[in-house]
Length: 206
Image 1: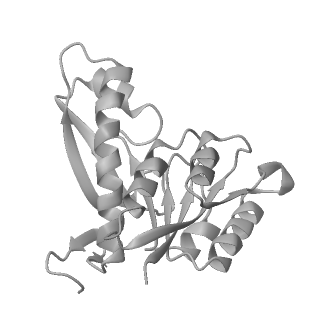
Image 2: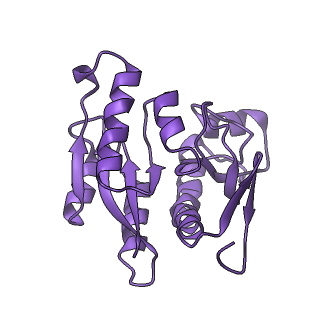
């Protein structure tokens, strides 16, 4: 049986599309069970509907605070039997309610080589620092902002004359490869968390 994924997306959903495309392959060990957004008109929801995937809009205005919102979010994901949650352009800060419910079963992707340049505007941070290499990171979600244990990373050279947009575009193509790779590793039981380190078993389940 393929692993059921929940995807959280607030925006255009390009990483969601990469996940949907991967899940459409017959050999991929996961499927998207539901896509949740905090924005009613997020293009990500249209991508999910086009793929025949259930969508859910959870309006933050319907909840008194972040914890009550996340309680409802967790309930919706658990009702659908989600085994792994993938944040793909989710713009809300997640509370401990969510982190505790899905610890070790929630991933996020960030367009830098963490722990460098967490948070907002990572490409601008990278260019301002004059780094020669940037990249993308998939990590497990914890209580911090882009601070969770690192699962997989890939480097992208920073070219002379790069702008935020040109660097972002090159990093994004790597993100689209990296996120499905991390999902496959999880679904195949090949990830083991030891403290802050994620051990990848190359042989199979372990």
